Length: 315
Image (cartoon, rainbow, N blue to C red):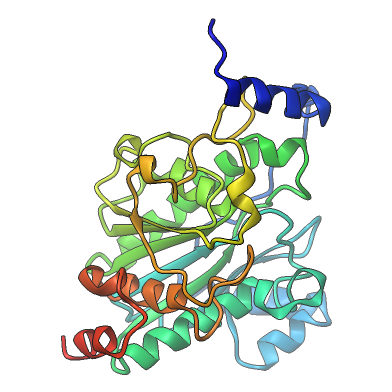
């Protein structure tokens, strides 16, 4: 075997970090949420009231959830908009260190990192772009992401479990809303979940959006086994750029989707800062993700301007 310098460097780094060690025998299964539709709201709300603060308060505020599990790191699937009538649906898949505890407040108390806040920002941007749109946005903490940037984050076990649950969700959405289109938005490790789900999702899934994606399980968009359009955003100052584009002995996630050789369509990143600033009001990426969800693919790469907003609204 001939080892390229990048591969040798990646292997050395993984060995130095102690990551190239197989997972322990009998490792516990990754928790995932069962797919449901709007009929699940009452039972989930009752479970959240029983769980007490702060979850009972979320229900009291009129928020809707398809799934909730307070055990372990926790699971939650929040719905913004009327899922029962939506013809455009976006599903946000978070990455490493996302937990129920931080679902609303954000990791480290930083609100922009919160899955609930990111879903709200995308929903509001879609409604601002096309006020009459029948849209729903799901903040999908429907799997247990790895904790920290250790061995689990360098492997795909958590992502594969999440991908299976995500496929089940998309099939449920397609069964109940067969004429709706679905956009999957994966952030960081969440992009790997989306990539692994791609070959099995129904045709209603028309777009896969990656934000600071670690990889999608393949090295080329053409190898995902899906007819969905693949999009990628990666800010210039995002630390994800330093990840080596390799997969070695089950570690690493390959070429990042924002790399030109991957073949995804680029999304604009003006006014995005760092690793978690993509779905923040005022960024070009947030507006582009809204355009993709609305089916305005032709304007998404130039999404920062007023002309693009006008083109979508007039459709």
